[in-house]
Length: 72
Image 1 (cartoon, rainbow, N blue to C red):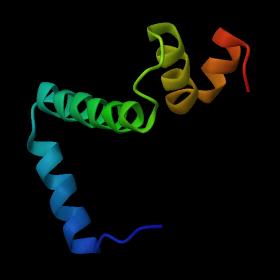
Image 2: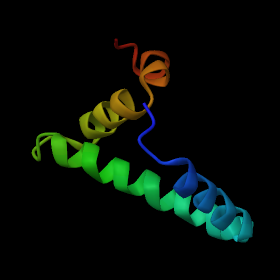
Image 3: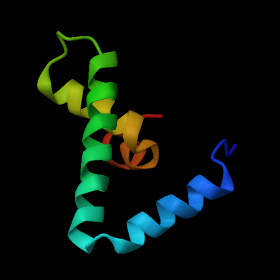
């Protein structure tokens, strides 16, 4: 699904092209941290640290979770 108009998509592409690589990288880091915070907020607060890491891995990297934790 794409709900972005072609004009806005073009404007965004041009803006990102003008950025320094480190700026684009930092935007990606920020987006990942936001996604991580959303996932963590959806998990029970009383999980032990190891279980919290496992659940986070399951949500963000399902294939890796199977390999690392043997879960599906």
